[in-house]
Length: 191
Image (cartoon, rainbow, N blue to C red; front, side):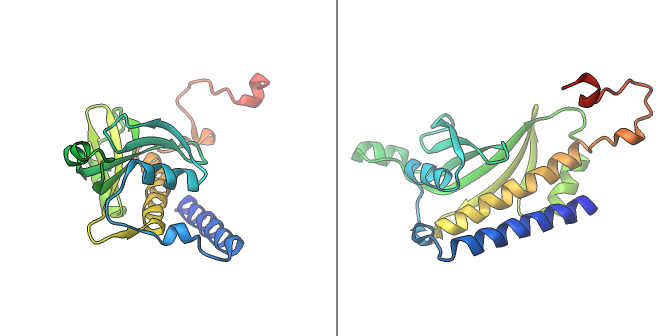
């Protein structure tokens, strides 16, 4: 619980500092998107200072990006007009946006834990498919969403991902390790 409160305080401090530094809202963030394109996805990622790792590997409108803290995430357009766009010689546009963070799943990823996280963090959907643990946030663009709102949805996903990881794989307290296994810390190895 203390870690959760600390994480929230750090996040709130960062958000406040960012808001105070900028002074004025970015005019690009006020733009309303009714259907999202590949160019829109790339603009959002770049404007956040994140790095694009791969483009269009999960569909015509998709990318994989890396956040400041190293988290890989996926932005995947859904309900896309691929055929209509192709016949018109235009880029595909999508009426929905699926944002995901994925991890490899093991025996620690149980349905009980997934259900608990889904109840505790309703802003995302946590799921397991084969050997993948997924965390998703879906944004419906019908009627329009501002770029700022799409970014906030992404911040929510990225902010909740560490909670999901800690729930699936609780951190080990080295002071309480009593398994009899030898624990070597970095300082002991000289690294």
